[in-house]
Length: 327
Image (cartoon, rainbow, N blue to C red; front, side):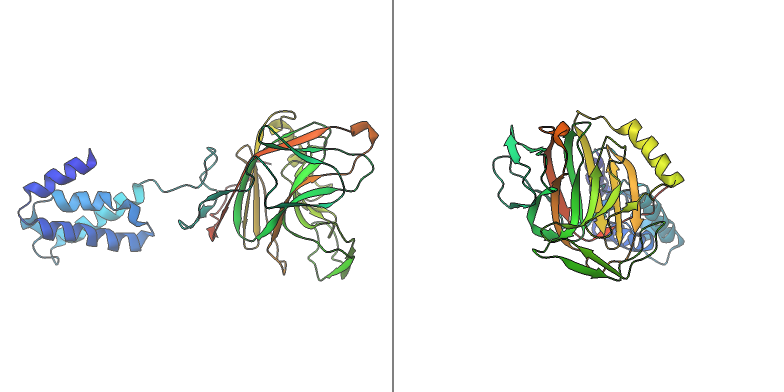
C-alpha cells in the first residue's frame, strides 16, 4: 500500500525528479543526524513524492527544513532490524548485516568437531548430540575445530536434573600442563600472579548448564582460575541468581541458551531472559566452542544431556546499553 501511494504521488507531481531527489536527500541528511539506516528511506521518499513541488522549488525555503525534520522524525519511528529470533528483549546485540547464521552441527556426523579431555561418549540420535555420563573419567569436551572471537551463539539443550554440563567459549587447550600469568581476579577473590593448569583439559569460559544447583547460564572459568566469573560466588547476587534461575529452569525439557561475546563483554540468556552480563580484559579473546560432560560418580552413570539446533553468527557487534538485570 505504501509503495502504491508513493507511485500515485509521483505520477501526480509536476516536478517528479526534483521531488524524488529531495526525498532521498532529506532522508540522507536526517539519517546522518539520528543514526538510522537506509532501510528506513520509505517515509521521506513518500513525503518527497506526495508534496506539491511549487512550494519547494527552492531548498532555501523554510518549508524544506520543515520537510527535512519530518523525514528525520519518521526515520526515528521506523522499526529497526533485530537479531533476536526468540522474542527476547530488543536490548540484545545487533550484528553487522554481513553476518549470517551458520549451523555448527549437521545432525548426521561430527564433521568439524573433535573430542578432548575424558572419555564420556558423545553420540547422535534423531539429529541431536547426546552426551552420556561415564563414571571415573575426567571432564569430556566435544569441541569445534574452528575458533571464534566475536559472535552470537544459540542452541537448545535438554538436561537431566542431575547432570553437570556446559558450553565452553573462547577456549583453548594444550597437551601439557601450562602456566597463566597476570589473570584478572575473580569477583570476591585476590588475583593470583601465576595459575598452573593441567594439560589435555580445555581452559576458558564455561556457560554453565547445572540444574542441580540452579546456576545454568552463569559463567565459570574452567581449568584456568577455577571459579565463578558471574555471579560472584557466595554473595547476595549469587543467591538472587540461583533463585531466579530456578524459576526459569525446566530440567528434562528443551530450553534455549544464547551467548553474546563482543570484545571484553559476554552476555547469556536462558529462554530469552538475560542471566549474565560482565566485562573483563583478557589477552586472548578467541577460541573454540565446546559441549561439556562433567566427571561424575557411579550414581549418575548413564544420565544424559542433549543438544540441537546449534548455530552461530559471527561479526562485529554493538552491544546496546542494558536495563537492570532481573537476576
